[in-house]
Image (tube, rainbow, N blue to C red; front, side, top):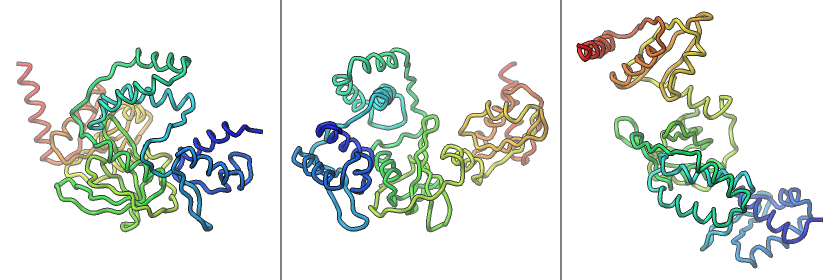
Length: 322
């Protein structure tokens, strides 16, 4: 039978991994009776852990917010993952997190066992962070609020800043946060519109988890990353172009940046079409140039305005060559 100290540590680890547990779930995980779970919860409270409980059919236990942060219980893989993340946080797109990451890493390394400290040191020695400041930065508190709402299946409300600068109140069922090359996206279901939506995290204002729970829906894609890629490609854009490329579709997909709004469709074993879109003429020109960098035959079908922009772009390149 598991000893009391080990069981208490296991119980604390479970409470930290999820927002709320029913007594029956905890009893099953710990392989004890419900009465034992209640006694162990009382022992944690005596030790200063703020475990709250609710009664009724939907009742359960949760580790509430207290005056002090209780010790976190991490397994080996989690500890190394956290340390590796802190090592590279300063090069990411989360604003105001650099100094905090250094302090947190120092505390973590102080308590890491020797076997894990060696793994973290290996990661640190092999990692060369490249600071990127061009992309939009997201406040760490916003990411924390959104991530918690995704984890706990709580309705999230916020004001969303659109492309024209106006803000619109939204109330959604958050599903996932996806990070792609320095940008963060929220995938969520919007009950008011009856459909899934993608939101840029840097455009969220005053996000708030309402405390209202919802039953998670099945995402209409294999993964959140796949849904994000598809939603970017399907979004309405002011300027579009259809490029016929003499290259296999898979080779073109691997070549294009994951954030380029594109849809690649095979037309044969060694040919495909790439549908591109952007709200900026210069951005669309760069996307077409990215396809041209494959160094294969291609043709472009687009509007006269985009054609003029492409000609001007090519003319400047030829002039630069003398």
